[in-house]
Image (cartoon, rainbow, N blue to C red; front, side, top):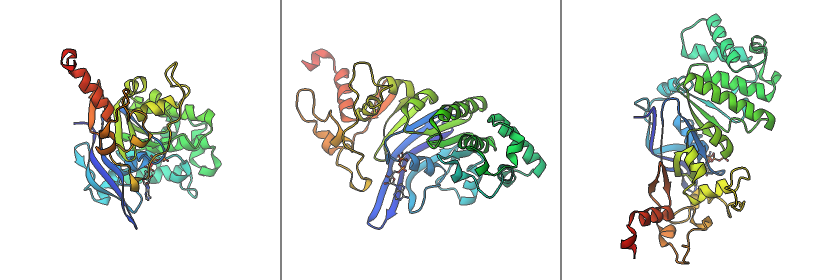
Length: 339
Ligand SMILES: Nc1ncnc2c1ncn2[C@@H]1O[C@H](COP(=O)(O)OP(=O)(O)OP(=O)(O)O)[C@@H](O)[C@H]1O
């Protein structure tokens, strides 16, 4: 059993025109100290997946089915009070915009002390000591002075360092980071990501990293999930997926990046756009954008149009794709039987 096991997670938004299924049958796990990347285009369901782990999905969103087991405890049925203990304490979140997390009218020190005292029976003095230590760990300049400053007095990079310090405050087992560097200057993004990686490694903290940036995923994570229209469509060790993506959508994401496309391959954006979740295409949701729906011999793969693909295993990776399933099946049939 892993530290975190997500099984068949189904998240919906109750809208006036009916429920919209934002996550369907999402399954993944995270071992202690492991770093997992979640990638996909805008609207794929990455943030909903992350937020649902802590039941932080904005209303009218709700978990309609499935299970989230964390350290042996089922989170989907936990009371708000019990969930608050897990939140922040054992799993913490880093958002894209530090100002979403920081309270503008409290000093950094007041916020950190308040957070510590809400979870531990300690004096203000002790809490301030721990806060200072965390600010030192995130290598913020003049950490002692920062404790008495307000968020608006810090630069964007410093604020995100404070956020990382707060995320580490209660020595969590997992940090969920949703696009943690996108709001920062490009020059500072790499610094902050390197710091997050270093601290997670040093303290054996698991990381779930949500990002559009496949380059960052390949540098920081050991495993990755690729999401499309609310489903996981490929998952496995990051290096294997980046070097040899199976799903045509993953191939498209990688080939759209100048620095990652395989030498000789054409740099191409994936045609079309992510479908609306309230009006998904039949069969494989990616099929209207997929250039492999037609086989090399010109015949049509009907399953792409009318069957939702199951996961098939290729090496250490899994992909939900009829073409991949067909390739694997043909490799399994001895050559003489194929004649
Ligand atoms: N508050 C909401 N109300 C209704 N539907 C929502 C809400 N939040 C998310 N959704 C639905 O869930 C889908 C997935 O949203 P999500 O924020 O997880 O995408 P994402 O992959 O994180 O995209 P981005 O990279 O742009 O943040 C949205 O396209 C939308 O259909």
